[in-house]
Length: 155
Image (cartoon, one colour):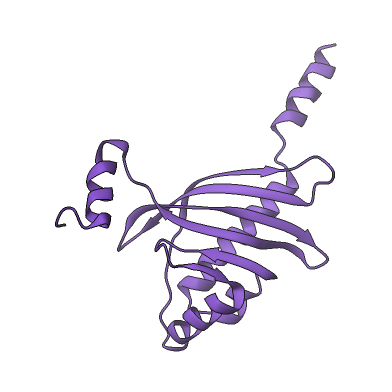
């Protein structure tokens, strides 16, 4: 009985291989963007992926995002948003082939930001279907931020 309980606890604590694979893709995304490696960066997305940026106009297909990012990468410039905390969920039904995530990110220009999105398990491994980058606005400052966006106040 004690051995069975110990085994159950060990199995519960064992890391989920799919979650580890998804985390590796997200870490590779930051590594590729930090290195301004467009080929490695865009290889992590599915062909029909979407990227939603922080600006309201930034709702891009992968090709539209590539048009924006490739000239930046070509100048040897990239961006770095390493995760400081991350939650990954792998769907059990109907398969273990869809995962979603949310992560706290840090950036030298913007401070704490958030990333969230969806990955799909393909024949080539986990690929990003959608990535959303957003600013984390504290609730007690939200009204002031909204007023600045609306043009009701000066920054």
